[in-house]
Image 1 (cartoon, rainbow, N blue to C red):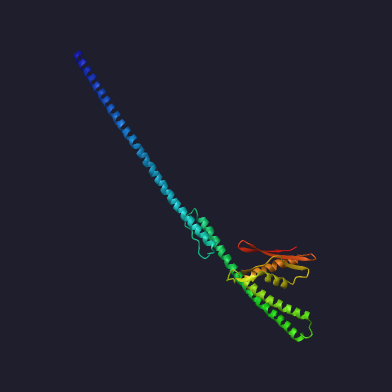
Image 2: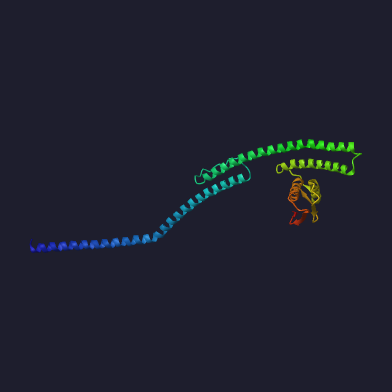
Length: 282
């Protein structure tokens, strides 16, 4: 190539190269500006984006927590109602499970307990009815011979009253009192067996008179003395259960006393809004 054309071509190549360098430099500057703008935009929007993501996550967590809490609360309420149902003795209504697999085992166990309690209650009511029938029949059957004994005592007193001494007449009177007392005890036993299923009559009970009558009916030996070491009140109470308590305590004290002279001391004192009775022996 001629020198002048070679120089011209060289200048053209250098010029084109310079133009490309300038274009690349301009493009680099433009890219840098775009990058800086995007970076600034990102840095400006990033907190809002992050805050939005966190808020959305928190909202989802609150929603899930509220839903789970509602399910737990409903299950606990149903469980509480089932327990209260069993506690109040309502064994006829079935306990239904809410269908939650996590707690269905508990409800199934309560339902099985309800079935067992219902069956046990039914058996107890049947046994109670049988006991009531037995007590009623026994009380009725015992009254007939007791009336016969009382009639015999009356006939003996009428037939042999002129030849009987005062001690014999006193013994007959005591016999008739014991018969009357035994009939009363049978009536009390019948009423006591029905305690809790019918209204118990509250009456004013003179405790000192009751204990004296109990001591007489028990026919304690002369070596056993019942002493009253305080004043006794007249209290409102069911009569039969209270009397049975004193009968058992005094009879037990006399039965197991092996001294030549035994003493049973009965006392009463006010204790708050009620009375405290004490039966003490040797």
